[in-house]
Length: 114
Length: 111
Image (cartoon, rainbow over all chains, first blue to last red; front, side):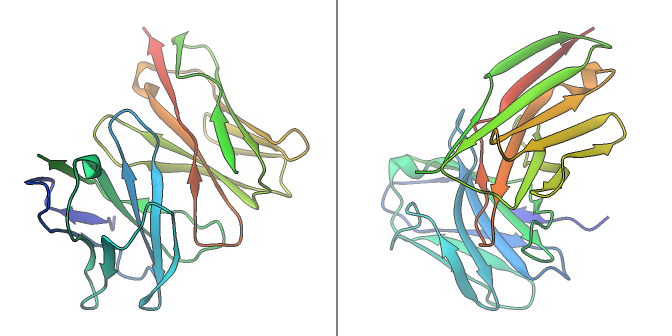
């Protein structure tokens, strides 16, 4: 069964450093998403992406964040200058459509900012 | 602002009983409501979707209801098993590319 994959599974970085989180969505999906989940808290929407551009973003997704689909398979989230409060689990998800379609989530990248 | 609340942080029930989880929302009119299961350290896994014009949906031992007047969805697991122990999330969506998740209910089924 097709699945969303994410790399790395864990990332430790120093405050102020840039990190890039990578995702490979399911191949025939058209909509891509990033979410984050701070330990013990709810899953929070960051951004959605369709047709090579951002469709919607939350207030969390400020200028420090960017997303890119550099080729036909990868979907990346970049955090330019990490802060302590960026420590969280980051999930990538993809869906075929957007009208209530099932989102398939990846296993997540656990980011720790020291 | 939009708010989604799930009835309790944790729910313990005996094996074989029916678990009922609640999702309430305010300041929102979702067209779709989804339920997900999340195990510790893992990504959410889709379980069921119900549309605003549907009252009830079933899948095996799972049942979801959606009351747009009460702004509430109920999620039932019948004949619960210890393997059903997990956190269950509701997520709402309407006509945009954004899904809003609830806080989750941690279910523990006791053998």
